[in-house]
View 1: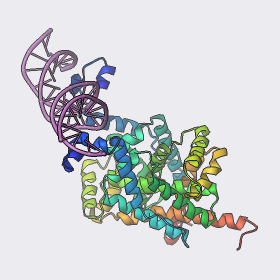
View 2: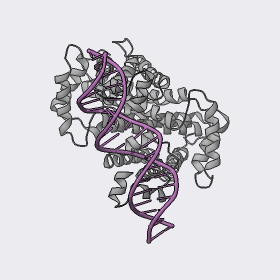
View 3: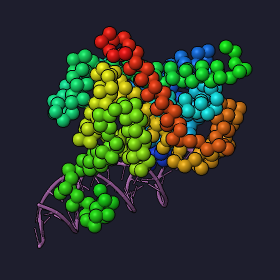
View 4: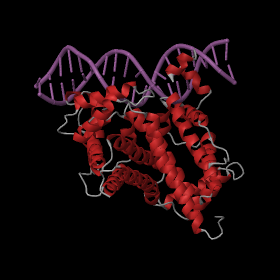
Length: 196
Length: 196
DNA sequence: ACCTGAACACCGTTCAAGT
DNA sequence: ACCTGAACACCGTTCAAGT
């Protein structure tokens, strides 16, 4: 609050005329960032819509490196969050998923998206691939090959060739989306009223 | 540090004779918690091993509600973390995944696991299902059906029937594991030296 | 209506002084 | 070697006093 006041050329105490407190402020910022994520509207291709918002979310987080940690620490009930959840569920329901399946699909996708961002920041995997080879080498140096043979082997793989973060994100995303599609098809063929 | 000192019947300043600082302390606690996760040894069934460690991780987090937030905020380089990563990669490599595929599979699985825990705490989805119906109803009350129709419909589904957290976790986990298995099979059949 | 200055109750951390 | 007391530089927040 003091630092923010300094940035605004005002005393910290003055801020309390405009905000109830620090929590109120952080909640507001959180919802603003969530609002930057591309919320899919009722789209023709649900799979494409889900992929687009996934990459959009990861893009927003990389634009605001502090955002994911902030979002993780807050309970989100802001309007942008509600619109986001409603938008995603809307696409899934529109695609033919049941309410329960849509809830599960939402959980699976968002768990993956937020979890990936978490792993990305923790493992210092930046956007470029330049520093991943360096971190891989440092892992090789620190960890003794005898103690951690598997870690050593994987680190060795990326000590020369850079680790492609975007490709890795797409890898897991495709697993989930393809699995969801398979479930959707199976459900349709099990439904006697469905158009084959 | 002051509160911890009080618990130990000692002054906060005294702690600095045993720990370099608060960060050092939190890193130690983090690695202790990570050490509680069941690290799979070279197992016969890689899929079962991955499922077991996933549920074990979620179990550890539910036993220590503060743990996931703590882990999320730390860069982990402790011995338990290294053993964890090595153990998981070891199982994947042993199953026949390439180093690159193992790294991607590790990212996908751990992203999902940690992300799910994050969603679970944020959405206040406890272990039991009793309070999920209450939260679902409160969502129904707060959000106007006209503004958020999809959210309203899904909340309506869980307003009566409780939301099964374990089943939801298994839902997404199965999507990823089945997808990985399919990739592994495809890779094997593409390899002329593979035993069919 | 909005800002300021001073104060309050907290932090983590340092360090000379004790034993 | 380990603990203590006091201090330091920070927090977020409150509130009477100003304009």
